[in-house]
Length: 571
Ligand code: C2O
Ligand code: CU
Image (cartoon, rainbow, N blue to C red; front, side, top):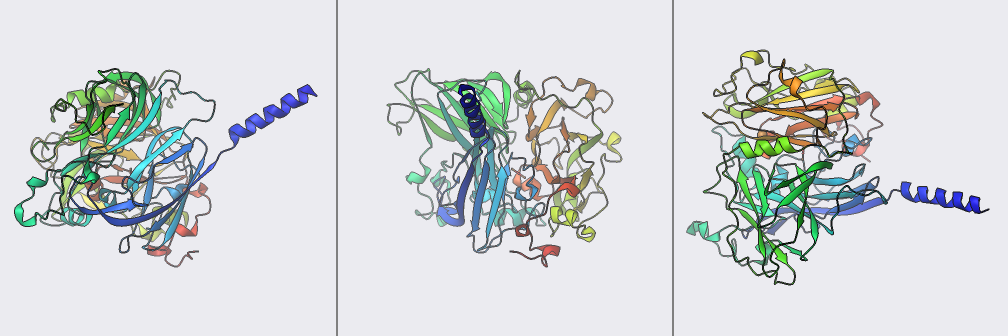
């Protein structure tokens, strides 16, 4: 009998472990006037907030988000950044790739499983909509009884963002005009949705006191209140539309322990470099003089924003000091914006944590070299990959591929290597006259291992090469290596780190450098791979991979209704 009870208890215990929950959210998305940096403008909110509500779940849970598009005159799609969507490729939220946009007034339900613990994000994925403030965080905790490889007392999250006063439309129209109008550097940097623009910078004819109010509580700095003598885990994510950032906490060193949902071999840093689409967890100790507060600060690196964009500031408030009490010091200055050496060094230093290493397949089946260039196509400024500037079709790829609609996108495969890559000078001003716009895609053989080499080059400006954070949907990839200069296909692969590479979903390619990635094409669907800088992707900096689309289950009719899928019946 006792044995039977023991067995029964055992069965119940495993049932409890395996019992995943459903986390339901109901979101109303609309435009509202907000002043996140004191300047009033239209902001997209979720249930009245930007950043939107955080999704908190446990590994194995199913997240169900019922989104109602209240934008009145604008389409919508929401992407769950870092969630691989295994078995639910139609819930990836990429308009034009995995679904038709959600029309104004319509409700769409995203449903997906969060299969790994870690720090993830969500954001709009329709046009340049993300810039308008639709974003938030997803935190997935490990299953009950599974310990993480580090200890902390409290767990907190913040999202870093850059902020523009021009609307999404002004930005998008400028980028797609001839003559070209660049978006420029942001007006401010936001920490967890709060920043500070200097209202006196507005020229007097436009200065309406209601439009910029430096004393508005909406733009008081974000306050992180801490108890002295504790260890904090801080999840830091970036969803900037342009800027690469440095992040630091005055007087406190940070230990990086997680990146994009994977445990990192701990590294202590004074400042963290973070690119759009990346997430990190750091640990810090509240071991400084407790009678005062400290600055939390973020600065732009990689672009010269010194005269335009002030640093983003938040307050580390040591309890019981008053949260509004400003720290007695000046915020620490950021690193020199154009010094790429420490940024490369951080990229190289991040390795998978011992005991949590997923070893990559030793060899790849296919190598694709993506040369990143800026071009002019028919007089318009574009970004291209192997001389192809990406455009989205009217019919989402997932539907087109599954239903064999061959005429809705260019069926000719784009090149795995630019035909004259060997002779391409990455240091000279780009003038690729042969660049074209196309919606062609890369089709990968199911379950094969693919290497991607991101090769950076000079832009159309002399002595200029930019940093591009590339993000892959539907997968994590191994980061096998970074290099400076031009990738050498004969010798560089010999230096790949196959022993303890970190897995990520977003990775930078540094100026004039290359980055090598490996992933297994084992997730049936159509997946975007693109530069996470909004304006770059909008100008064509992306590709789409198809893999195992014949294995995708029946598509939900909710994703249809646009392009050639118009006839398909919406429920
Ligand atoms: Cu977070 Cu396609 O992006
Ligand atoms: Cu880019």
